[in-house]
Amino acid sequence: MSGNFDAPRLAINRVYTRKGDTGDTHLAGGQRLSKSHIRIEAYGTIDELNSFIGVARESVRDSTAIAELDPILLRVQHELFNAGSILATLPDDVHPKQARITPAEAIQLEVEIDRMNADLPPLRSFVLPGGCRANADLHVCRTVCRRAERICVSMGPQADPEIVKYLNRLSDALFVWSRWVSHRLGIPETLWEPNCAASADGVR
Image (cartoon, rainbow, N blue to C red; front, side, top):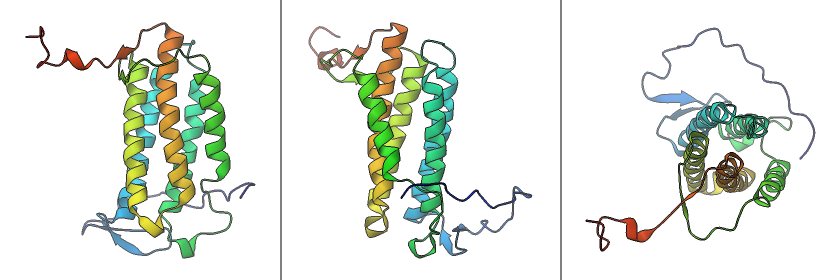
């Protein structure tokens, strides 16, 4: 699917409605579901990821050397809202022009992964999050993204395959972006060293 989506048609005049006080909420089609339902957990976790992406954007904008990542992360935030739109709608209620994730989103992430990964040195070990705030923030985003992916997969036949694919690719992109910001800032990566554990010889 390609082309423009319908603009949102909503008016948020009241922040609270009291309708969710009993532990359920409504979908886009009006159906009521428990807030513990896997579908609610899926788009709630994507909302959480979106918030962490916002934190990462603030870190990225602290340096002109990595500021080019900011508009990419902003696009990802819009895409995550599109994913939430579909997850908040039962399949039979999805409108043809409703915002959603399409194959184009995953393809664009692949383009950006390949472009930024080309500048990075090969890995000799797994890396630990940290070294700079932007790196750590992007790793937090990566782990929340993986959780969102696992929850979406747990939806079984109700899972949207494009969303699952997108989240899988996004977590890869977040890993590459975390390495890329450290590389651009000249900050060495912290590699996993098993013998730095408390049980290793010579550590105690």
